[in-house]
Length: 169
Image 1 (tube, rainbow, N blue to C red):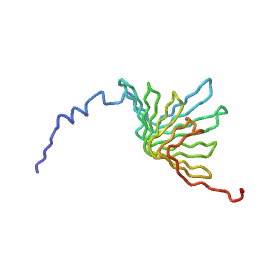
Image 2: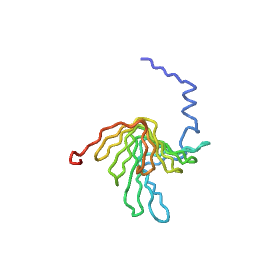
Image 3: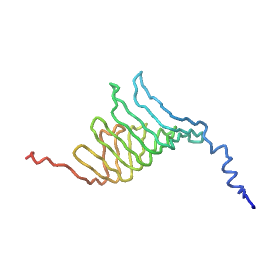
């Protein structure tokens, strides 16, 4: 029997680059964001990687969940996704793959494949297909802009199905 190996110099070089390795690696992360002793949000992720570059960022390759709280510490909304990246300086979180935003107060759910959360402006937006499920309607669109709690939103090219109560005249 004969065996052979081939060592490609470019592959070896790329695998050994220190710059491509995360500075920090956290398993089963839970971070609580508070203001004046009150919880504002909670971030959970099975895996977080922190990279130090010109524009430092945190990567959530196995997904994440962020829960937002009201002033009485009740859960008011949440964002989940299968992948995320948080640009530290810009205060922007980009969520991809099976992104769901749920407003618990209004019982409304947004589903999309790509969403940006701008923490400075406290807005979320998407430029790809979205579905919003409400108790009495399903709305589709080519994107949207919303406050970060998913209370007020504007949908691009909306279409959908509405339930009409026949008792109303």
